[in-house]
Amino acid sequence: ALPQTLWQPSDIDPRALRSIAAYAEAMQVPNVLPPILLDVSQGWETWGGTQPATLDLLVSINMMHIAELRSTEGLFKGAGVLLKPGGVLFTYG
Image (cartoon, rainbow, N blue to C red; front, side, top):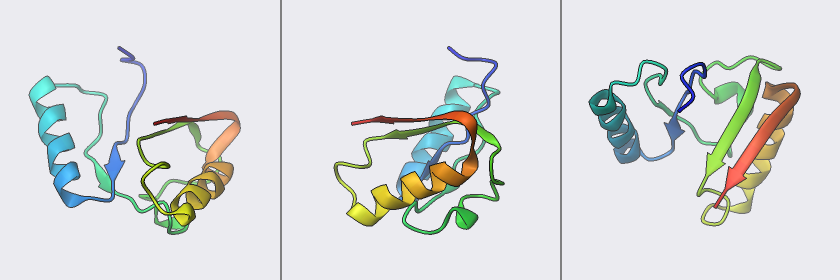
């Protein structure tokens, strides 16, 4: 739906990463990068090499209500560093 957007999927679960990769391949979506292992409770420096103030959007789906508080805290800390001025952190679930 958003062909002009480059997506970097991630998950902490290796099984989920394989599922994401298989789905993206089956759907033949050229704007979805291979998924990366990401633990938001770790510092933003471990988030796949993303540099400060380079992201327009961070999307977190179905994480905060099932993860430990330190994960939500890490998400907000990382978003504060990695999002461009005026960037958006979108959370769902």
